[in-house]
Image 1 (cartoon, rainbow, N blue to C red):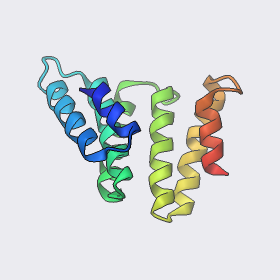
Image 2: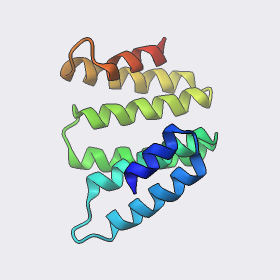
Image 3: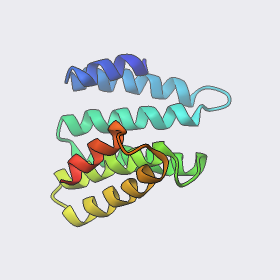
Length: 131
């Protein structure tokens, strides 16, 4: 379901993407044990889909929930944590909260610069969004 959500997100069919991410999220939460990494991935998918619909409050809520979960799972310099910080920065930018957006993007940048090669696409995308 997550992969289908990703496909619909990429094709900008946000409402359909939300349906797939919601289904995937329910399945992940109902596993025993709960697949927390997959839960976080689907929360980010939901965040991105709601951001695509310009529902920035929902996008922010899902991204914050994913960030909290990822920070409980992995070290502070994990790539997924940096990616989530980038997502949060994009949302704050769209909300015109530029100071917060820059702070979040800079936190992500510090992590990416530490763990990725200088030509990594994630690094380039983050720098482009800061630009």
